Length: 323
Image 1 (cartoon, rainbow, N blue to C red):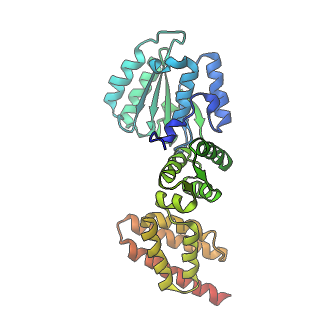
Image 2 (cartoon, rainbow, N blue to C red):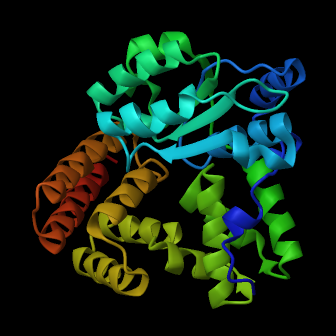
Image 3 (cartoon, rainbow, N blue to C red):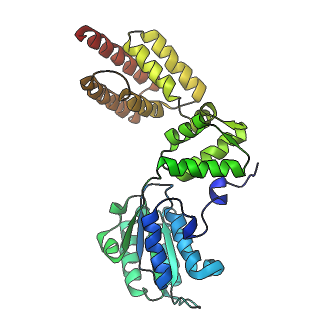
């Protein structure tokens, strides 16, 4: 078992290695071919390949010495106006030595930059465009000011499809001699969605605990309850057995170590999968939202979750009367 993080170990090195995002990769390849890159905004959810795409573009453009022509800053840490005035400006105004006349500055988490810093960056991008091209990576492009957005070519990254994520994880499991069951794959997708970085890290954490990565191991390391257990608890409450449902809830919290806010989200998801009339799904979703708000405001977890189970029991009783 390697102690190197698999997400970094198996990160694509070139644009050809990128997983999915085919349309974006083709556009970036056209930049490499023309040996010219505009200012860009890479926007999308975490773990979809924004930073990786920027690094792959730089490697394909400059070759193995790409690090000499590249600066990478995380704007969530260094997000003030002084960083733009000093670090960014100093790098941007120096001309690159080589065939490509410009350097690349990657600003990760750029949506966390302060408004003043973004205003300063806007002027820097305009003034030094001949010597430096900026790639801004952001989860929410709407948090970047309009003048910067209008100067950049937008790229929208999306969560990876299930089949692409499964294919990549199976490839890693095979290379690392890890047994990955179908139930384990299902659990990883349930926990991570299309966030490939989180999926790879979850796979590594699960593999370090057990040679066989199954759903039980995945849910235990991810701090998530098994959806089947959550569904069973909801059914027990709707069938009118409040004490048994509360016992199942306590067992899940103890077994999986889940927080109240996490289990609330799972209950919300499982309610829409439950076999109850559609109008009641709507009512129960509103109740779950109310309990979630109370938890966020600092209310006691056990009291609020017990109250939610009590509302489910009441709902079950009403549904039974109407049927």
